[in-house]
Length: 402
Image 1 (cartoon, one colour):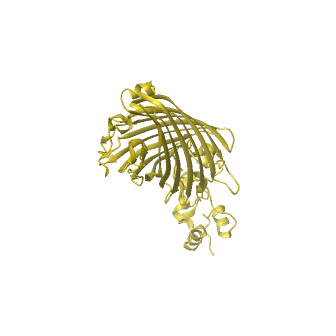
Image 2 (cartoon, one colour; image 1 turned 135 degrees about the vertical axis):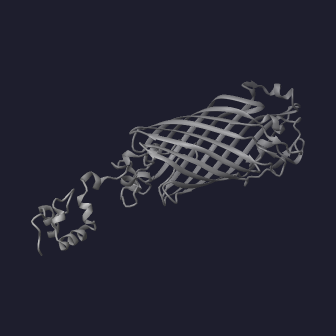
């Protein structure tokens, strides 16, 4: 093989197979065709690529470096199973830490990496005791001056089941349903106390979470979905007014309508701190088969969390919710008998303060699994009552990613 004197030592080294060129190679134009062909086949690059400057050769965007499918660290950037210590992952938000998910009372707060599944179970217990109109508490006697029957207290227990799957890094699909138990105690003007109970599957949700921003350890995604009327609106029980009578609105299990679910979720992180915010709205579509629709709902929440260790974090959350009165009415209910049967006494606004803990398994056979606990109390309530006020709520849940 004839080698022109213009060939540099770097090119000779490539021909001999000892090293690969980095940066520009001088005198390339002086090579013979045979040498140029040898160099082109050495690493799959064309001869022109050797004339680029090092900055041109190595120039890549952040997305190419950290999100390229060929990058072996990609799965640690978005996956629940990351330990959060990867140097590349430190440049982007990660769910692989105890505060990588929002407090357990927040739904649809995070997305997953492509191909990842997550299953979740939550148990929620809510206690309501005493009546309120506006911001004023009302005694049982005050309510009985207006109605023959008053609700006294109510408990709701809900088992929530969820599944998430990410077909791509930007899109996560979520499905949720629940099984609900409700119990309400009542008092009549004659001093008779009675209790009604209902239980059954509640409404279900199908939601798409689409990520639109992921940079500088911050994320933003859209929440877009549909509520399905899988819960019953025909619940009945025995009361002093009769046997097997239709129950008022709060004792029904579902809404009876398809609902539009829309909103957005923001997440941010530092080494020890994380924070987030979410705004969601629920808009019922048309009336249900009983002639009414629940009022529009709007929910806004924000939280901050501190990572104490790789497996434990604590959180504080404010959650504001406002909901409207019922449009229409179930003709079988008498709104003069009890306030829970009056569609114009169902709206309100509430602000809750929540305290939570997240426990997370970063490694081992349970890697990617977390346990969440959150206890919340209302710090402000204004209700179009008389209406039962919320006293407290407890949510406990387990989430496992695969």
